[in-house]
Image 1 (spheres, helix red, strand yellow):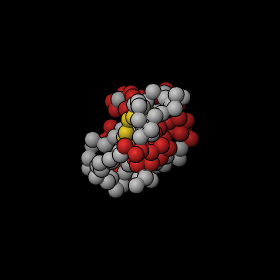
Image 2: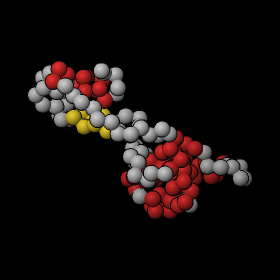
Image 3: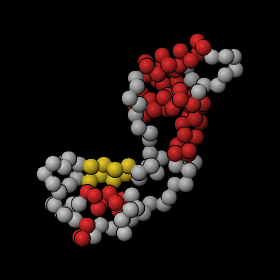
Image 4: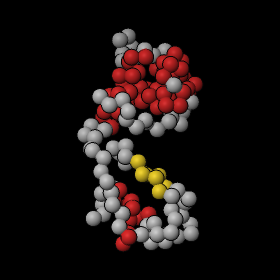
Amino acid sequence: MNTETAPLPPSPLTLEEVAEHFAHWRQRKRPGERIPESLWIEAIALVERDGLSRVTRRLRLKRGDLKRHRELLRHEQRPNEPAATFVELTPAAMTPPPADRPAALELIRPDGLRLRIEPGDGINAQAVLDRFLGLGG
C-alpha cells in the first residue's frame, strides 16, 4: 500500500477534547467492546498535527492499531486511485477575474488530487474548476 498518500485534513478538535471522548467511551463501554469508528477517525485526524507518538500516548492506543486504522481509512477514501492526468487549459477558457475573487484558490478532489490557482489576468476559475472536476470538455 502506498504510504505517500495525501494526509487527512487536520482535526478541528484538540488532543485533550479527543482524549475526553475516549475517556467518556471507556467509562461506559461493555467488556470486549471495540473502539467506535468515530473515535478512530478523531484520533487519526490528530496525527498530522500532533504526531503519532503523542496521539497514541495520550489516547492510550497501540501505535500499530492506529496506523492500521489510518491506512484502512485512507484506502476506503481512495479505493481506485486513478493515475495522474494532465489537464490542458485552452485560451478559450481564460477570462479576466472579477475584482472580488480571492488571491488564491486551492481545489482538492475526493481522490486527493490538488490544484492551486493564483488568479491573474486571463484565469476563468469556473472553466478551470469544470476541467479539474471532469465536467468540461
